[in-house]
Amino acid sequence: MKRFVIALTLAAVAFTNTPARVKRGNPIEAELVALEKSAYEAWKNKDRRFFEEHMAEDGRYLDPDGGGGKAQYVRAIIDNDCTVNGYALDKPTVTMLNKDAALLTYRYTYDIVCGGKPEAGPLWASTVYVRRGGRWLIAFHQEVNAAPAK
Image 1 (cartoon, rainbow, N blue to C red):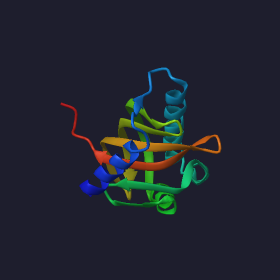
Image 2: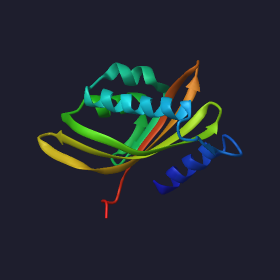
Image 3: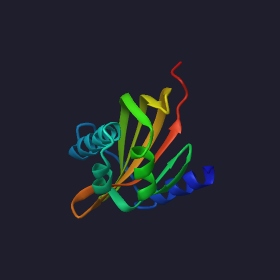
Image 4: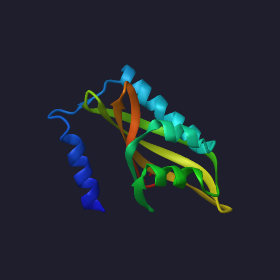
């Protein structure tokens, strides 16, 4: 799995010779962070339509349980026995890969109940957005466990 993540990261960086961090307060950062927060609300509210409309048809995801394409992603986050009680995004950073591709990274905490069992904890997440037809779409999303705060 590490080779896959490294290869994906290198491929993303290859979009441009000089990825640039977006300065705080930049309209692109604000738009992507707002879009990501909307995705979390859609997850919480089991809003299938949001993901069908905001994920690229060729979009992919990777999480501790595996990975897949758009259809698998939508099923995994919508068609489950989970209730989202809360979540919080922290430390969002946007790096432009080129004028139509951006990487959003952040840490988030969550409080959910799946199959009657509570789950909580911190994760690190990254989402690659691509601009197609004038809209930002989710091209890739990944989550990895974060070490507990010290």
